[in-house]
Structures are given as structure tokens and as C-alpha cells.
Length: 298
Image (tube, rainbow, N blue to C red; front, side, top):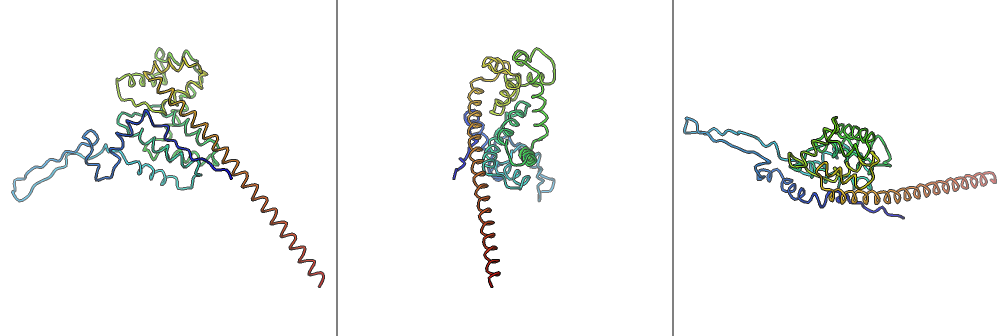
């Protein structure tokens, strides 16, 4: 019997996200620990004002905690509440790890959602869930997953579609020279370039790298020099992108192998069930014939 190897998706967020993981784990504790967070994540100010009466004091709470991110366990619980049906283990194992890594990216202080990040995640998700038994359930799982992160799943899908349509109309030159043109997508890319260049919050991630790869793929811009120029135009470190794309390709290769093993196992079990069923039908027919023979001989 073939065994399906457990696939870890933690590789999607290792080297470049180690700092994010380290900082994120500081505020993934219990509620009682949350009040010991650094001041830039929670702004507590309790003012104490003595009243005219010496017998009592009036304590005024000047602000409340609003910036404490949820724990990873809470995000996972939200996902399980939103989608309660069982998920085959080969998909569920990867999804659970993917959700943890996405949580750490999502709640990193410098993170700000952008459409390339959205396109990258949609690309990863659709690749991972390709071949899922039910197309309808695959989309329901997607909705539950994104909502568990307190984000809008429709935004991910819409942004991914817009970028894909735009990229199909590009060529290697126009893709790289986005800064010299006007347009909705060009404006998005310019904003990313400014933030990545130090003029705002930007957090590089492997989803972002996959989003860039998808743009190049759709624009038929496969030359390594095009990726180098695009990274330069966006103020992104090309070494990080190259490394993360290698991780992504390797993961997809392993996933394909695992799915093939799973398919072989399912086909074998189906054949065994059919053989057992045929054998049972033959035995029933023999028993029926013997019964008729015995009856006719009486």
C-alpha cells in the first residue's frame, strides 16, 4: 500500500520571515499576557482623578486595547468554525500550515495588503487545491480561510483577476516600464515601489514573490533579465525572490508527487472494492443455485 508523505508548507515562510515570526510570537500569548505588550501595539492610559469627596476616587479609562492581533490558535479556530466538513489529510495538513504562515504575515506590523500579495496567495491556493474532489467546496474553503484572517476573500479574487488580465496584455518591456505609464495597475505598482523603497510600510513575503512570478508567466516574460529589471523597478531584492520561487517550485513538485500517490491508492482501493463486490455477488449466486438444487431434490 502506497503512503502519502506529509507535506510541510512551512518552507513558504522561513528565511525571509524569521524576523516576522520572532516578533509575532511575542504577541500570540494568552489574554493575560496581552497587557504586557509593547506600547506601539496597545495604548493603555488609565487616569485616576480624585473627587471632591475624600471617600471615593473616580477611575477613568482613557483608551482601550484595539491593536492586539489575535493568536494563531484563534485564527485556526475561526477557520474550523467557518468550514466544519472534513478535509482530506493531504490538503488539510498543508492548509493548516499555510494558514499559520499567512497569519504571521498578515499580523506583522509592517504588513500592508497589496494586490500582488493577493495574486500570489490565490496562485498558491489554486495550485495546492487543484484536483480537490469538489470545486464548490474548494471555493467555500477559500472563503472560510480568508475570513478567518479577518480579510475579504472577494478582494483577493478580484485583485488577482485584474492583475492577471493586465499581465496578459503586457510584454517584457511594458511590464518593466510600468512607472512611465498611467493606469490602475500601474498606480498599484508605483505605490509598491515607493513603499518598498522606504517611503511607507512594506513587508516582503513569499506570496509577493509568487505574485511577481505569475505576472511574468502571463506576460510571457521568461527571461531572467526581465525579473531582475522588474525587481529593480519595484525596489525588491531579487535574491530573495529567486530563493522563494525555488522553494515554491519545489513544493509544487512534491505536491504533484503526493497527489499521484494518493490517486494510485484511491484507484487501488476502488479496484479492491469492486473485486470484493464481484466475489460477493458470485458467492450469492452460487448459494442461490445450491438452494434451488436442494429444494428441487426434495
